[in-house]
Figure 1 (cartoon, helix red, strand yellow):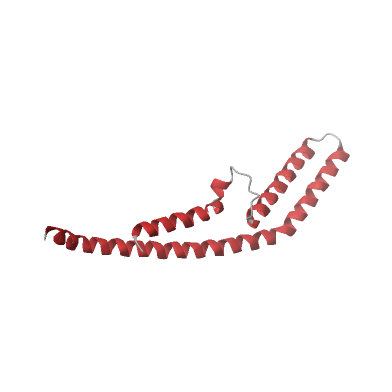
Figure 2: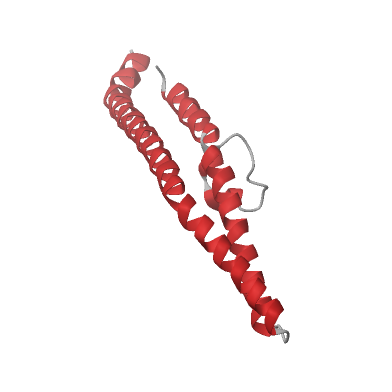
Length: 132
């Protein structure tokens, strides 16, 4: 396997798992085939909704409306607390997968470095053969 093949394979692996880069995915709608991304997006939207309702309740003049909004915020909070273990479980599975990928990339890196050292070792021999 040549150095170019290894670099090509590493690029392909990085492109394949690029969807897990949270910073890059923030700009896009994260509702693809990734269960963690979908669930996280839904979880974040529920948090945003609760914050908006809480702010609205704080500025509400009508006490009955404020109480109703705060009750809705408490219901959202309770639902989020119930779903939090599921989010942790999905994140853990994702971390395990990324750790496995990182190990593979480390071994590819080690192979590429070994190949580079071998090329550096053989280059003078090749130059000598060219001279002869």
